[in-house]
Length: 171
Length: 391
Image 1 (cartoon, rainbow over the protein chains, first blue to last red):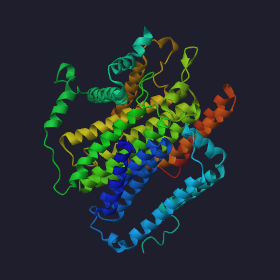
Image 2: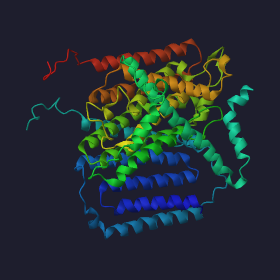
Image 3: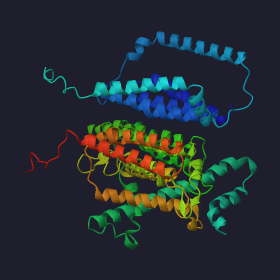
Image 4: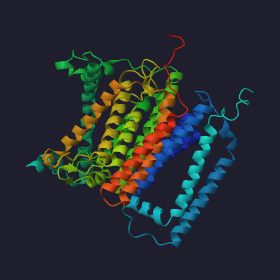
């Protein structure tokens, strides 16, 4: 429980809390990315560099940008105040408590069932790479196939439509 | 003797650390590593602005700045004072906080990536296990600050500029990362220091840099093109064409905030160039075995300045690309070519050393390059452009 942990935890909690409570959607995205950066820093503090960097690369670099793009493209440049949050005011905390309970149960029962690792894993990136290429090679390939299919699907969705359906163009 | 000069900064740091009490040593060690970098690279930025303006001026048959100081050498000072004393205008409808934070986030992200750059022998702030990943992860934070700047200005021009810039940066991040994968594969490590060390050594007088292999030169060229686009420089300066398309995401910024964007952009250019040096040009190693007596940091900055001069040269030579050409180039040419290049690096790794693997991998890369460009040119015809309103 060091100062750096408290600081990072505060950043994470403030960021995610602001992401839920702010009115302006773009502010929400920015606050969320702050929370995700704090989370990544927490991972790095635990010695999981690879997970932390991937967190920043994927969530701040891709997901937050994607969310920002979606907001910019689906709304006007100045998103109006939304009251979408109010309709979930009752069910939100309930779901949050349920998810927290499940996670807490899993964590507590998990640690009691398994002995705590005595030696900290070293060279984590290399180990992750080796594990992915040997033990988890099939899931890796499946995920690769899925992502390729998603990429091709996105390409087809975005493709110029006038080639095969010219007569339908001016309806 | 040469050893001492080579390690002089490391020795000075350790000498200074000797005067610090033990409890404060980690933090003062960090400060002593970070402060020189934070001083050196903005200084390089100042030198580069003069070099760029003088060089571009010469290419355009004019003098460039020559009034401040000796041959205009004090021009960056004048620029700095000018931007500090300018009025800082914030649009009335702008989102004040985000508008303020955008340049700050951008400069912080640009400085953070310097943590993993090996500037010389034993001269790196943090030798991270996943240093390359850190570099690209922090680099992706720049896009967020671009979005913040474009959106918070509450102006259609800056929003459009931000969309343009982010689309371009995301598109060119793909070839940038994929072309660096070959160096990571060859070195077998994500640590920048290890990648440099794996390129050490000489055959005769020639170094073992990755750029002297078929996949290395291809990766280097793709990396440099993508780096040009990532740092929004000509011919990929769509995000900030000042005169023709109303600049870009920073149109509503003035004074020192604008200067911060300018600084961050150049810092990004230096960082990606330094990464290209690390991946393909042997880092701080000397180019010939008989020149190893020159200190490592001199070689690093020499290579960096060479690449910067190449950037300036390209900017003075090439016209700007159109947006669709830019996107087509990234997704249809650079991306497939960098993927094929990865395959080439794999073949290189598993074939026995010698003339055969040179031929095979070179053929693969050159053929795919030719076929790709031929394939993309099909169904397109080029003719003299006619202008509707200016003929």
